[in-house]
Each structure stands twice: as C-alpha cells, then as structure tokens.
Image (cartoon, rainbow, N blue to C red; front, side, top):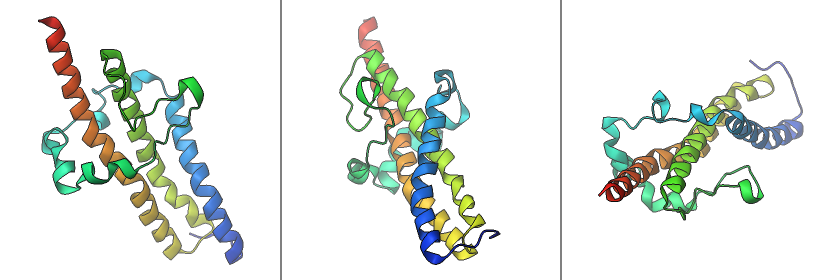
Length: 166
C-alpha cells in the first residue's frame, strides 16, 4: 500500500539506491550471524533427496553453463575476503570454509528476496510486482548455484577424508 508519494524521478532514484542498500544489509547481517548457524544440520542448508546431489540444478536449470557469469558477492575486503567463484584451496580446512561461505551466501540471498515489499511504501502495486520479479531474477540464480555446488564440494571433502584414513 503506497503511503509515500514521490515524483517519478525520486521514485526511480530511490529504487536504484535502495536495492543495493537492502542487498548489502542482508549480506552484512549474514556476516554478523555466528558460524554455528551455518551447519548442514540447519534445515535450509540440507541437501534434499529430490535435488539428487545437485544434479537437479545441472539438468533443469543448466547451472554449470551460466554460473561463471555470476559475480562473487563477498562484502569483505583484503585478507578476510573469501572468494567462492573459484575453489583454490582443496585442503580439508579449505573445503569446509567453502561450505560455510556457500551456506552464508545462500542465506544472504534468501534474506534479500522479501525486501521487495519495502518498495510498496512509495511505489504503485505494479512496480511492487516488478520489484518481486527483480528480486527473484537477481537472487534465485545465486541460491541455485549454492545448492548445486555444495553437494559436489561435500562429496569431494568426503572422498578426501576417506583417502586420508586409508
């Protein structure tokens, strides 16, 4: 329900300023949450049987064909930055860190999805619908990539652990 009426120019400017701020807020929140929240036992981060170890995303959404086009959205800079785009540390610790950051990234995008409703305060209902579509188009691909990658990295980690116990 629109309660703030802005000129078209201010409305457009507000949309362009607010979306990045809201996305950044979701990312900042997820970096403030304790790492203990991001375990595979948490319902959101489980791999479900229908996902077929991530293959659902490869077959239905062809994630492996376009995932390289997505940016690495880490908000940290410098040495603390963890880049998920290219897995470079194949140690057990490195793979565990990747899984943790993958869960954090997924939650960030889930939390960013519902922010579309904020635009209802100062835009007409049709624009709110467009904001919902935008939120889905921007965040869902990132969620799909995390759901696709995590089971594969987990399998790699399990294989690595088995080899080390031999």
